[in-house]
Amino acid sequence: MERTLIIIKPDAVQRGLSGEILRRFESRGLRIIGMKFMQVSRGLAEKHYDVHRERPFFASLVDYIISSPVIVIALEGTNAIQIARNTIGATNPAEAAAGTIRGDFAMEIGRNLVHGSDSVENGEIEVGNFFDDTELVSWERATDSWIFE
Ligand code: IDP
Ligand code: MG
Image (cartoon, rainbow, N blue to C red; front, side, top):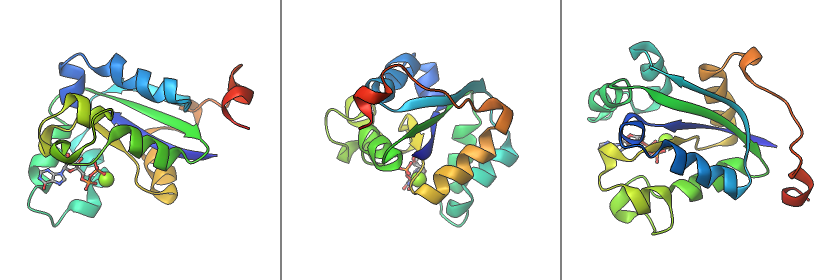
């Protein structure tokens, strides 16, 4: 089972799209193992986006993610990384396929609604950055055997 960190970003929460976005991951078959509503601190935002520190958009990216509350979700599933990223769509909403979250609800790269981890290793690291072990729940979903073979 892989783990991915999903962030329903400030624009999505402000626009009332949180439920719609969670619904897409849930109905895809990914299993929720952690979820909370929070205000991201500047320190945590800079750590989360450290790989982009030298990029010209780094400051505006950090300001965006701390501008208003977010919902962070830890999801688990076979191929969770790839499946979540395909559900989210391309980074630039102008290039995101219709049927993806960004392709259906977003217009610009700096307001692209949702984050999903980009590798198995980063999924583990990012879930650990946002959740304590006590906030993650290991559970059997009644539908698991109908979703995971
Ligand atoms: P991802 O969210 O699809 O993984 P990344 O390349 O990891 O995309 O970039 C992280 C976030 O930084 C993007 O989701 C987007 O909000 C922002 N971003 C990426 N590239 C640009 C850019 O060229 N201009 C402004 N913001 C950007
Ligand atoms: Mg990324």
